[in-house]
Image (cartoon, rainbow over all chains, first blue to last red; front, side):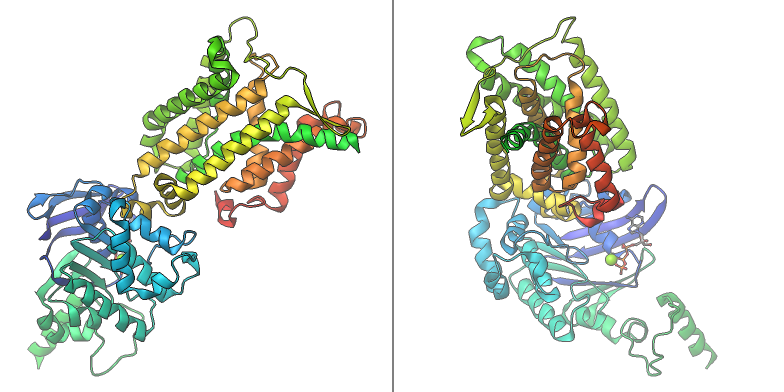
Length: 266
Length: 296
Ligand SMILES: Nc1ncnc2c1ncn2[C@@H]1O[C@H](COP(=O)(O)OP(=O)(O)OP(=O)(O)O)[C@@H](O)[C@H]1O
Ligand SMILES: [Mg+2]
């Protein structure tokens, strides 16, 4: 079980971005993490993979645990060895390197397993096998996302953290990514799925969290979240009026407050 | 024509030295985005160390040079770990200033070991020359070219085919993404400094072959600056090619000094800097550099 207990994360010693977040990813499950831009989703993934340092961020309170053991202070390499891999926001493939070299880097911590893992990854992503000698920067956006996922799988993680894998992909590719996440999960890999596309994420997750300005405001089984009116309105855009996306962003709490008041008044 | 070709051959020898020093700059820059002005310091430290090592007669020039390169590499690695690493993430400018301080310290200590007299790394080739038809090339220049070629090929092979080389290329492209794969970025920084230190020591040894080493020797390393500006701060092939170009231009300026008298008595001293200024004006990222480096 991969967990964070009540963590606070601060950037540049002053910006409090996560304020007491708790979350669990049970082994072999898919957990969705939703939230508006700037809510702190990527920050949470950084805290789980040792990447806060690069951003001058720190965990100032709370713990990150893997099977009960505290792992919040470990370096990224140590976390990868323990089975936590992340596909970062924006894919971040090495565009100047070949597809195969990208995969080699994914398996950097365990080069002996390269061949075997490569076969596994090529099984899931045949397109990577075809293009293995090509420069990764020339792949299409969809193929790059496949490569980013394949690269993370080269470490054979027990927990795979995905940061907005459907970002910028056409609906057909989003569907493909969804299927891939399901197949990856079927091999026993736990998945923490950060998504703006809440419908997609909740359709495959068993549990979901909603993060808002650094706090978990909802923590429910995915099915319940899908059924929640407020979630439907705010994150799935399924409200009846279909207000065409006004520029101002309302927060989940405001929506709730507003609804409560409406209910109360009616 | 013979004069032209001879100047050219001469310039390749000189240029090999510049290329090796410039490669160090570029390797450090690529892996950590640090512009290290400590290269002259490592070069002179290497040269002075080699002047002592050649006194161990069974080492010979090449043995002393290689041992010196390894030792300076280790020194650079230690300095990176102790002085530069804690600064990573600070403004580029602050780190650059630190490397200038480092350079001065290294040079001062190295000069203290030169003592009151000049020192020598030996003169394995003397004035012997190679004759290619009517063109003559100093053997020491030839040796510099051959050694530089071998080192460059080894380096490129290292980057291309080894696990650590791959890690270095990954860190050069996207440090955070490399970290996320489990690459030890610290090891990459350390190795890049070790390589730069070692290359500077080798370059210095060739520059010093057959001449006296005193405390006016170190500015040779400064020619690496026009080289990296011309080649591009983040391009290894650029450093090699630009090193040769600057070397050849200097030698041409020496050969045709009479025609360049309007540049003063020693045009070869300023030609590299004129080239640098020209490049900065028309193509600030160099011949092979990435455009975005311009922003630095
Ligand atoms: N390196 C950083 N330094 C300072 N502040 C940061 C840094 N990275 C993120 N932040 C701030 O932390 C907050 C949370 O950012 P984060 O990237 O975690 O949000 P997110 O939920 O992933 O958003 P998005 O959906 O846009 O990716 C934002 O207010 C952001 O401005
Ligand atoms: Mg994000």
